[in-house]
Image (cartoon, rainbow, N blue to C red):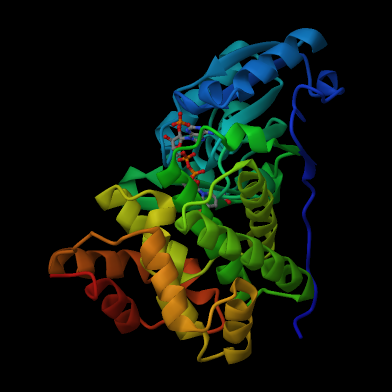
Length: 367
Ligand code: NAP
Ligand code: FE
């Protein structure tokens, strides 16, 4: 049994209307920068609730609503400059993983005007980030409870993870109503992402009894939830389960990190434009199969938690959830293998892939 190392300082406040009813916004500061994407904060109703609550608490705010999917270093640096110009004393992100990850990086850039672009990954910034708060609108990434900010870095043609306990949000607000407007396809993609977090965390070398217990819970909720989603059921109860399941899965990866599914999925997002959860779906079945070589007991446990008979049913479920229509050229297979092979996630699991395994896994999608 692994020794227990565990730290997660995020306060979780959940439930319908939890933002509008939160009594202590004035403790956040006097001027806030709200960070969000172009539509979701408004569509979900979260921005309206937050504005009402800030007005009531006498908090001034500006809105930075230019966060794109898979946010870039450049966007976050621009957000940091805007926070400084506005003299914000805290940052609050509203959205899925993209705006929440951006909010974290913006908080770092805001406090460190000298920090240029990808220097942020060196983690030697002089000043601590501004305090970060998070309001979730997808049921997937768990970014609201993690110390990670995944940014698109053009110079390396890939996505890269900024990881430091300094960027844990102080509070995560989770209101299931905000996920009602999430399109069906994004609901499925983000549910697959959260299921991957549970499974990759379960097989992590850093797993311990606390993260394992949470991973089993997350796999059960997200696995059964995905089965319901695939069979066409989607009501507010299911949305609530998926939201809380994804947050539990986020707590798991905060403790364990992710594995080769994420590492190998990033190039499919960067070069082929696949949504993050869709990219993960290309490798999660292979991940379970490879990991079963080291931990067949955990493999069996996953099927029993999800109510499946074995690997074939697992594969069928993932394929039904996200039909795979991407074909890779041989050049891409070689390129993506080179990009993924050095990633930390490749070495984070109980069974380590070699470079030719990675090549083979990409190659199965080539013409
Ligand atoms: P997302 O990229 O934040 O959002 C996907 C799309 O859904 C966007 O068009 C967004 O609109 C829309 N949307 C979000 N919430 C909505 C709502 N309630 N109603 C209607 N539309 C909504 O998706 P995501 O899957 O949550 O995040 C993916 C990002 O998170 C990736 O960059 C990934 O690498 C990262 N990630 C981070 C962690 C971590 O621990 N930090 C873990 C895994 C993944 P807008 O553009 O208007 O917002
Ligand atoms: Fe993810």
